[in-house]
Structure formats: C-alpha cells, structure tokens
Amino acid sequence: MRYFSAVAAIILFSLSGNGLAQAIAPPAVAVPADLFSAEDVALMNSILESDFSADDSLPPLTPPSAVLPLMSAELALQSYQSRSARQTSDLASYTATTVIRAELPETKQQGEYEVKRQYSAPKSLLFTALHFTGDTFVKANVILRLMQSEVDHVQKDDGRLVAVSDVNYKFSYKGLREIDGRLVHIYQLKPHKKRLGLIKGTMLLDARTGSLVRLEGVPAKSPSVFLSKIKLEQDYADFGPFTLPVHVHSEAKASIVGKTIIDVYHRDYQVVPGTLQTAQGESQ
Image (cartoon, rainbow, N blue to C red):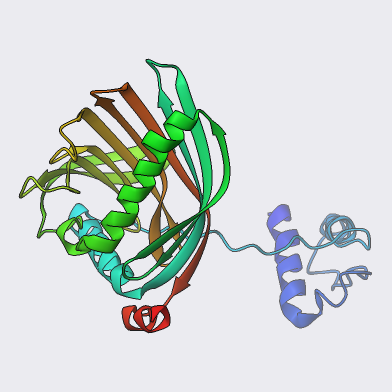
C-alpha cells in the first residue's frame, strides 16, 4: 500500500490546480503526521524532486493516430463508385510530370521521355517535352504513338463507356489481402462487352477508404491486329479527394518489333478542383 499512497498524493497534487505552476520548484510535502508514515513522506518528496525537477520537461501530449475501420466489400465498392462519380464532375484540371520508359528487348533499344502533362476537363490533354534520352526509333514509333493515342482517347472517347462501373462490368469478390502493409479488397472484373478501353482482370480497393489501389489484367479487345499478349498493371494514389494513376506498366508483343515493355510514371501532381461547368467555361 505504500506505493499506492505516494501515487495518490501526486494525483491529488496535480488536480489541485497548482501542479503545473509549481512543477519547476516543488516544495516538500507537508502532511499531518498521523496520515502518512515518515517513509511515505520521504518517498513522495523523492518522486516529486526527480519527476518535476527544473531540468525536466513534461512530455508532449500526442493523441494516438486514428485508424479507420475496415469496410465490407460491398461498402468499399460503393464508396469507390461514388468517389469516381464525384471525380468526374469535380476535377477541373491537373498538371503532372510524366516519365515514359519504353524498351524493345529483342532489338536492345530503349528510350525515356520526360514530359509535362496538362489535363483540363472534359476533353483536353497537352504534353510539353522536357527531356529525352535513348533511341530515336523508340521515341518515334513507341512513345510518341502512345502519347498521341492517349490524347485521341481523351478528346474523342466517352469516359462513361470505359468507366469501372456496374454499367460496364460484373464484379465478383475474391477476398481480402495485405499489400505493403495495406489491406485491400480484391474484385474480379468481367466486362459486359468486348470494348476498347475495358479490361478483363482484377481491381484492388483500399479496405478502409474504398480508394482505387490497382487495376491489372488484359484488354477486353486488342487495340490493334499488330499487338498480342497484352498485359496491363496500373497503380493509383489519392491526391486530396481525387485518385490518379502513379504508375502504369504494360507488356505486349508487336508483329514488327517483338516484345514491347512500357512503364509510365506520374509525379508532382497539381490538382485543381472545380465543377465540369467551370472547367468548360475556362477552356472557352
């Protein structure tokens, strides 16, 4: 009981309102002789002198970091679809630095092109060249063609036709998995139609937020008769309320140059929120 008596005295000392004010130079404890023994008083004084001396400082109070609860698979999918719909209407524009690396293993040719990327809703995508290294054949026949196809896709295609939504896909839940310390829900994607821009594969959603983490698979329809054995992987990250790609990896076999490996990295996102109507007005 001796330890409990000393701790109780310290708690009462703090609750009196004078604990912090007198912490720099704590006085000796003066208590009635019949309440505590001499050993208790000596112990209380030693604790006060050691724990509240002038050389010590109180440790900062840091609240524990909040951990979001796990979502069910159904709720995570619903959250993702709601977030995706809001992004379509609320993302006015963004800029990013994009690095495109292309490799032709069979001819041992490669190239790396760094560009500035600027998107404005709903149908404007511009690239500004920054730096290129490598073989000009790869630049002209792989990288520039990839950039042009992306510009054409933004300008001409209807995003609703390729969105990862119930309209275009059947979702089948495949379980919960941990990736790099992050719990994700896994869904199998089966396109309702063989349409360009849709993929057959899997989608990974953050199990705590419903944010898109990764898409991987094969195209539902090949973009060209000259390409085969196409594989795609796309990693995403959150930037405020928006989810944008940070790495795209693709492999394919081309009839002319053989195997083609492309990695696209996006960094330094600068996102401008707003409504679709606002973005249209600014582009006019």
